[in-house]
Image (cartoon, rainbow, N blue to C red; front, top):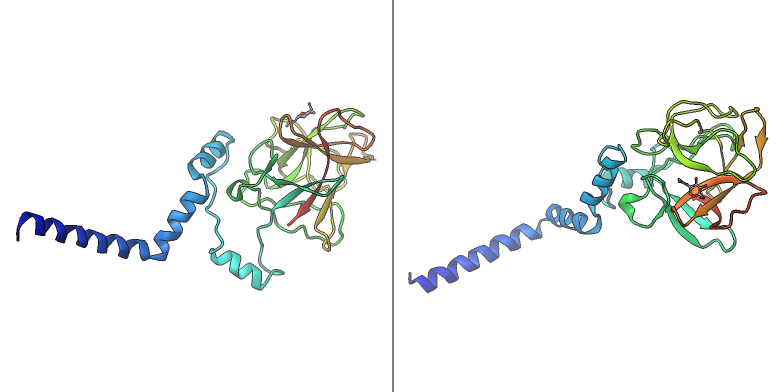
Length: 233
Ligand SMILES: *[C@@H]1O[C@H](CO)[C@@H](O)[C@H](O)[C@H]1NC(C)=O
């Protein structure tokens, strides 16, 4: 074979090989994941936040398919959507990274299980793969103009005042079993118990300046941001 011929031959052999490899669905899915999710960036951010690397999430995982066919017995990953109260427009989804503000990137969304319990009130919301497994708020007594920041936390019993059980918000106290859940709408409404042991009326507030959701007193209207509602979707 002349040099030119062997070059052509080598080229077609290479072409055939690459066609074969790219035709394998596994490889294609891997490529898709790499493009869809900024894995490196996400895991770097997660490491900075002291979290383990995220597990890849895709439409093709067996868990997802099984969950759809039998939702009552299989724990399913859901997201928490933030909607602006005044017009119900979506603001995004609670992020799995502090300060848990809205994201629309699938790999960054916090995954939660549908709240369950004997009553629709005072439920805990379990977070998938988090160091602190429940979604709650940090702080103790909520002052008239104060804000308690959203946090991931260890369990605090229902109707209990805030306790130092460990959370992702630097050493503060927290509450976890604070959610009322409506199975028909997916809406999850928080409550708060003051240090005195009595409940106080609260609402959820979104602060665009630091991209966080906080719990405030229902009489409080901070100058920046707006009221939001949370939905399990
Ligand atoms: C975000 O800003 C508000 C208003 O200044 C503050 O009350 C809240 O604690 C901040 N949240 C976080 C997570 O820093």
